[in-house]
Image 1 (cartoon, rainbow, N blue to C red):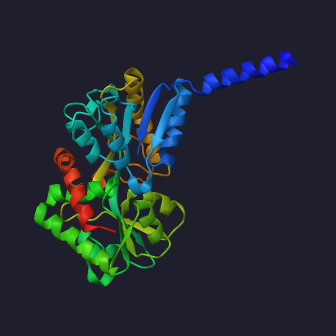
Image 2: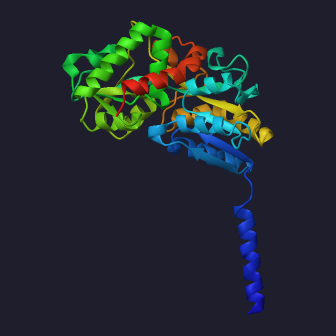
Image 3: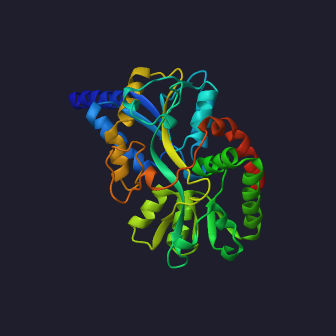
Length: 337
């Protein structure tokens, strides 16, 4: 009995040590967990590394993790920040929370998706599109972002609340690209319509996609990955890449960055190299999220559109990053509960 008890105590001690073992890498990730987790598990299997991942929730997408990186600035816990957008990453770099790392895997990524000071790199992008329910609306009738505020669609359109995630970055980009007056007019129209029920303000892009998929809304702003999931479910949906005759469609890359003072810097660089590889971009393109590779020579399924197949908005990411917090505060005032 004593022998059995000794074995039991020893087993518990080993298990406790194993469970409390420090991870090889701490990753903060705002890409949807269902898309990122299989990739991270594959990385662990290939390398034998133990990755501790912390994800963000949909309604607070990206903003929560960014806040934590800032709060932990003097004693960082996080090694790598993998964001599903670019604006906040740029701002973190400008504010001194990211360390430069020129990954060899990024050498063939187009320059507009790489920070000149190597503090972040973009890859595996998504487009900001209108998801359209084809039983309620002819996709060919939609051409411009201004269609969202057309009176004939009153009460039949939706957009996520523009205070977090890609919707915030999208609206901040409109200010940087179109100017204060034009972008302000657009957001003011949406805000006014939202108060009267003319525009449904949802808690996230995936909610917009579900509302359109289920026929509760005719169309709405969402990300191309949320559209891909809705299309894969067999729903009668189509994608419109708006403003081909104007400013173009916004293309938002995932971004990855080394956190300044990362406790596991060598492991972090190894993970960044892996994440920026062509194989990872290819896997994201062929996944349910249908991410758009930023490199033209990365394989993609026929269903994943290439940047050359639609007019891409010309974006000054540095300007977007510099202004994103200011835009977040002003949009909170416009879209108060």
